[in-house]
Image (tube, rainbow, N blue to C red; front, side):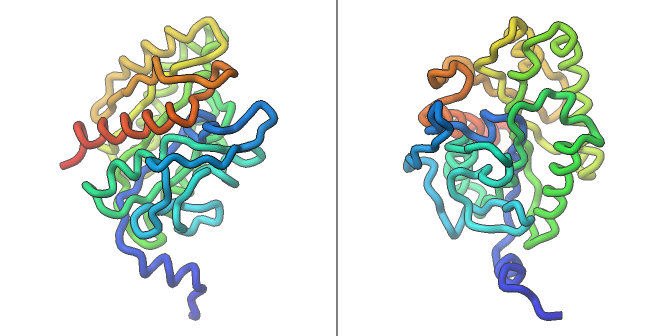
Length: 249
């Protein structure tokens, strides 16, 4: 069978260290996006492309050179800007080699929207399986930034711990990776009254190979919800430090 150019290039690429980017809009990135939903196009040096070492799984399930906005056409019908993924990858590449990023975040999702069987969850599993199959590589960790949507009601806040832990267990089962590392971000913002409750749950998840980095104190945009471009760069470095300190063998 004749291979397409995209398939040939996929097979020619070296094996990747694969990282899953999931959650809601602060993971998909709103750095540099203004109130009129226009991205300013500014890419800090820490988030720059490296066409030989940093790749993303695109919407067509093929590997391509990664560049901002990473979630363009994946967090669909949204204007995406700078997120933490590229600064994370740039901070890691000299230690781990070729980095493969699998963007899966969906803006506005609550934790219940990531239950097994939901569109978001099943798309994540499908994309990760394709990432490992197309061009090879090893799935190394999930980077998870979500929770702002669950700060509004007591019911959502009370079920957040159980739903988050079930998500991690389900992912490990469905990807057949029982020790898959997960790096959670404790949220920095939210419009609901249960922000601190969600933050405490995130910092207290008690499962093996789960660590948490705290986004509190990182600069927010005028909407008081999304991280600025500079804050996203900082967060990417924090996530890289967490991976290097806890999981790099």
